[in-house]
Image (cartoon, rainbow, N blue to C red; front, top):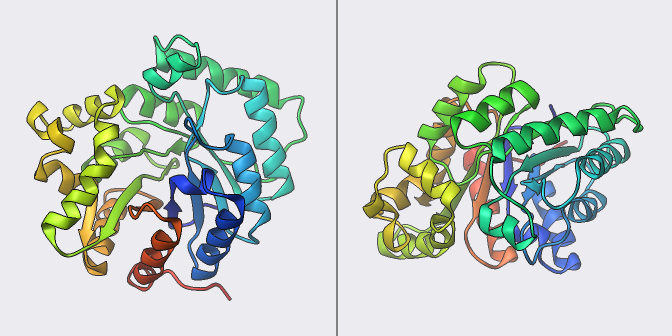
Amino acid sequence: MGIGRIGVWHPLLGRAPAQAVRRAAAELEALGYDALWYGEAPGTREAFTAGAILLAATERITVGTGIASIWARDATAMAAASAALGEAYPGRFALGVGVSHAPLVERRGHDYTRPVAAMSAYLDAMDRAAADLIAADPAPPRLLAALRPRMLELARDKADGAHPYFVPPEHTATAREILGTGRILAPEQAFVLERDPDRARRIARAHMEPYLRLPNYAGNLRHLGFGDDDLAGGGSDRLVDAIVAWGDVGAVAARVREHLDAGADHVALQPLPPDLGAGVAQLAELAPALGVGPRR
């Protein structure tokens, strides 16, 4: 459905100054990556505004919300925004939708109880709203930020697939079993090109520590067999190595192949240098090992 095989997930694509975002998007497109993903959280641009900036700055690459929160807009607005970008940029927009996390939702003044039921009702409302909209052709794929089985089942039954975040290849294998065939599976994979174990894990822990405080991610990791000791202090070595790929380009490329072999259709790579330019440089170094190259 247009998202290709290897993409890039970077929080600064939805947060950095627009000039820097445009430059990075054009560079990543020129390198040959298939898709750009970005999040929606406090301090970021509104998800569809961010997508419009990226789409306008590029010519062929797919742009995906990773994710747009259902609590940030009602279902009618979500459906209208997705249809508008899909119609304006045919085949280049992907809609990632998620329930976000309780602390962030409560900051918005909403009740986070029963998130699976809330998502199911929201998707039904989106479908009803779509009947009154100018349809995009092709329709943007709708992917859910699904981690646990019930949300993955919803991604199978009421969406085009799943866009899991902060997961190891073992989760990808489980997700594929639940989704079955015919549904997109596009996990995110964080990485750092650093061969020194101590330095690499220090960078990884700085990235992981905020996520480990969020119940959705912590609960999913426990479901995968990690214990409280693994989740403490930014993550045990075992957990760090499972969530963040580190080493040379060969080691990172091998992790991508693990996801693909486990059933992923697409892997969205997140470089961990906090600077957008440094992240693009690591993605440029990594591209040949992934078979990514300029399009002719």
